[in-house]
Image (cartoon, rainbow, N blue to C red):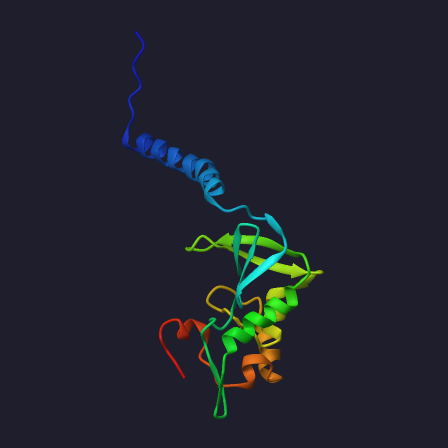
Length: 177
């Protein structure tokens, strides 16, 4: 008569550990891959500018990765003069993109459903261009990709760096000049 194998505590723990290890190494990556946005999707077309760091191509709302531009209603102060730096940022982006096809490489999706992307025109990184011209700041909360561009704009007092301003992330929380 054959004996029925019994499972002792050591075998049970090992068996449970093996199942967890299998789940973690096999199933979790598959689930994560299915839930993640396409890593290298590309969106190409004519862009419509909605503000200094957001564009629309076809039906895709695209937030430019790693940068934060002044809000459309945001103002800056140069001496005693108040100027609409948010509109100026939007206008600068609009002029730069006007008449050119824009190519955006999706990196993620934000909580508002916008695609986060690095966009180029004729091979030039538009995100970097906006920051180096002083029309946007490096958004260090999310990326350090454009800090050198910001340092250049600040040192040469380009765009908003020629004035006093509130960083856009603080302006959105209600802080004003």
